[in-house]
Length: 94
Image 1: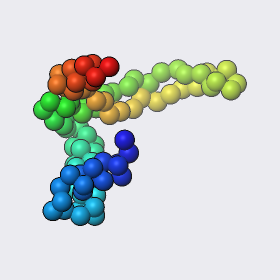
Image 2: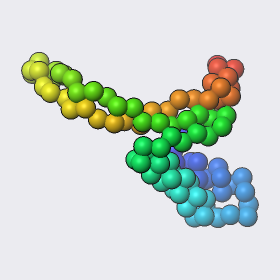
Image 3: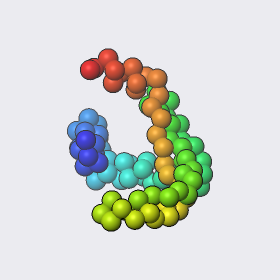
Image 4: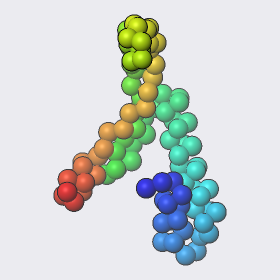
């Protein structure tokens, strides 16, 4: 599912809001989650899952084209952990 498909589902499911209003809502939710993660906060959506950040340490990598060793710097990356309800629903629908 793409972001535009999500917007369409929300707009179609709630007749009182337009596609543009649904798009604004979806964008605001994504921006709020992004801003919280950028500030080092944790975002928890009960039943769905939680978004956190994880630190990756610097390491020695390999250039796949040349085989040469390269230094890969440390970084902080977003991480999603699904909630129990989401895990069970996905597993049940297999």
